[in-house]
Image 1 (tube, rainbow over the protein chains, first blue to last red):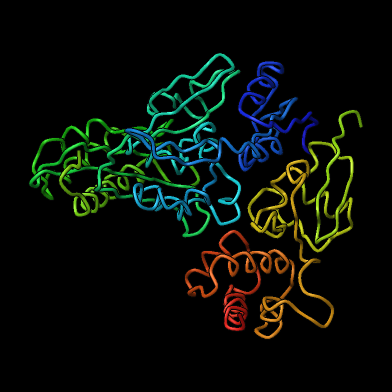
Image 2 (image 1 turned 180 degrees about the vertical axis):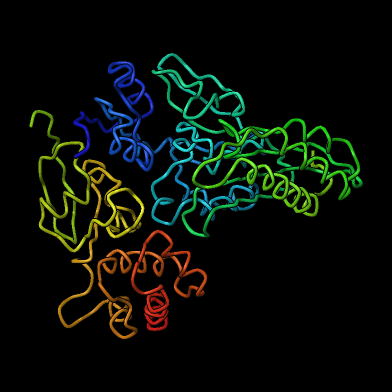
Length: 290
Length: 156
């Protein structure tokens, strides 16, 4: 049996925030439940109140705004995969949905949950880092927007306060056209990442612009390798420079050895995957669209 | 129980109303409260997919959804698929193509197969393999399961 808890189905964001405020640190936000229920079963988390946001419609929308694409925190991974906006403008996100757990989990797991759970290997995070995403956090008093790169603090640790809810993810537009994703798992289906990496970039006459490299599962938190980005930024693309940036990305990671692979293996795989993704992103890139 | 919550869930077309503890998982609700034991519990760790059911047409692991979350939804279990002497095409596929050995994963496999074919009427072999990637079979090596779903797709 799972730990005993109370439950409320939130009817709106305001209702959910009110419940969080009322029940304090004993409350947990329940969306898809694919992380929370597993944690409760393992007794890693024992909330006394579940605030269920899975039927809050205002959290399940994807909109194109001025200067950004706004993805509601309650959009499921299957919802991302099926979204025409995502397919057209964020092929990197469409790509990662195909590598995210399995069909059954994709039908429940949400983008907000994947970020708030802050697993170092969370699949959606490296692509969202590469797309320079920010996270909209709401309290009953108002909203604040923080860079995803700052939102993630450590393994399962974020900037989220006890009375805050992840409301939406903003991706600034225009989005770089060169986007590439690489994930290494121990098998094809339902694998947890050993290493994952995402790259986005533009180019102007072969010169790399707005290069962003997100890495997952190779440090206490997913992160952007600014060292590798700086090697590429403003320089003409070449195999040599991609190899040097990949080496820098590997050196900027701090992998651990675990059941899925040794630190040395991960270091080598970061180098290989980043190099591959840089080539693919460059091939798909075009002149910046302002 | 102090904190029971009323739920109303349409299961296989029949409205079911119960008071349940919030911690009760949908898989246990189906098996123990409703006696629908066709939904199997395999791993109880959110991995194997033996407990796959449809909620409002979407395949999910019933061991990883609280029953209270299904309140107001329509749930389809293996008992709601086909009828005596009138198998669903996916069930018929498993029959004709020998898609099972021990049978433990079969209800979940069939529910995933149904969801897959609802979304994609004519899946490739690769798409079928991806579509059942959340369902583990430890007997067949999957080939006959893939054949079974292909059989159902051909039948339409």
